[in-house]
Image (tube, rainbow, N blue to C red; front, side, top):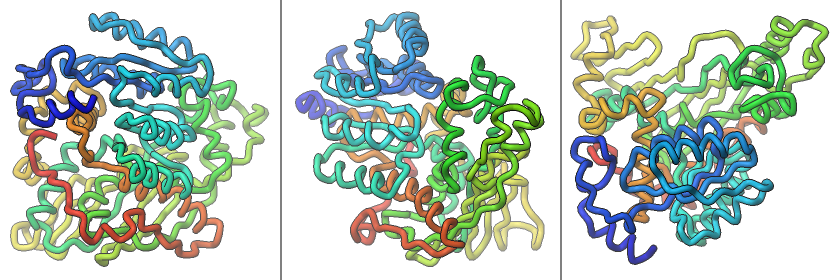
Amino acid sequence: MTTRRNFIRNTSIAGLGLVAVPGFANNSFSAADKLNVGLIGVGLRGTNHLQNLLLRKDVNVTAICDVDDNRIAIAKKHIADAKGKAPKVFGTNDLDYKNLLALQDVDAVIIATPWLWHTRMTVDAMEAGKYAGVEVSASNTLEECWDLVNTHERTGTHMMILENVNYRRDVLAVLNMVKQNVFGEMVHYRCGYQHDLRHVKFNDGKTAYGKGVEFGEKGISESKWRTNHSVKRNADVYPTHGLGPIAVMADVNRGNRFVSMTSHASKGIGLHNYIVKEGGKDHANASVKFKQGDVITSTIGTANGETIIITHDCNLPRPYSLGFRAQGANGLWEVDGNRIYVEGKSEPHKWDEAQPWLDTYDHPLWKKYGEYALNAGHGGMDFFVLNSFVESAKQNIAPPLDAYDAAAWSAVTPLSELSIANNGEPQDFPDFTRGLWMKRTPYQWMKEMY
């Protein structure tokens, strides 16, 4: 692996990548020089990653792991249909993934499992010397956040949090505007995860996103495990889709850091009302007491003086929005309303339609690969986040979204839980970089490779 990575590092990156992408067609790897990837978790999200990996000519999928035999069968069929070599299969018990990590022909792993497994699997992967990509959120507790950082620093092995929204087209265009100082000195941000998940948290036990009000052992897919977090935790359990892009705009962990946070939760009635509406007041789940408030609002203060408001709103009927707002001394972007205002450029006191601005500042990645990426999932974001993971792993270098980011963004969950439980008491934000945020250089996002 060391020899191959040295070869990769000294090879022109422009010659590597996907079969079907213009500019990536002439892969300079021989078959033996491909990145060998294992997948831990091949549910709906893991299968999406698998399908995108199978489109690449610089990757071998050598192993898969899942405790659900049905998902294994689906994954094996995808690999066979792509003319791939049959993978080694693991999943006889919850810890069989460790046998996957022991394989010599696995260089990197993608972890797409229920949340409670994310940190332990990522830590075990780094301990085994495997470049790890983990789905969001990366951690559930502050101890787990530190586990990610400490293991990375001790082993020297890298991990990447696979936050796809960081690669959304409008997000990267606004990041370009922030970096070019279009809005002036940045002052305030808003973001969140505002998404009606009632049809995800409950189903009929047969269809992942079908009707029904079952969860836990009687549920299927995400309802089998995700809904229990709403039963047991009053916290923002899913902060990174909104916070990840904002943290990059604010150079968090690279010249800036989160300092403190306060959180409040509304009453929680949405999930109960949904059960009564869809299953009836006499359904067994109508008596379940959900601890999570329906709307959770957190405010973060940063070392450089910006404020960030994060909203978690998943239990009530509403259209989808991540609620982005990026505001500086000279102007701002708001995703709701798709609008931008820049002093001296916009008509005074009137919003501009955002799209002409977003087109002008379209990110180099999207300009070059946007047409191809659109079919990769989530409007193209999935192509870019996976490409960043693979390209970083091939060179064995720090990814754009690293262990310090995974820890800081995920820490919102336990800190919000503490603050809510203590009537909004401010919580000090750990400095996961141990002071190195003052010296770390921001990642060079404005490029067209990854």
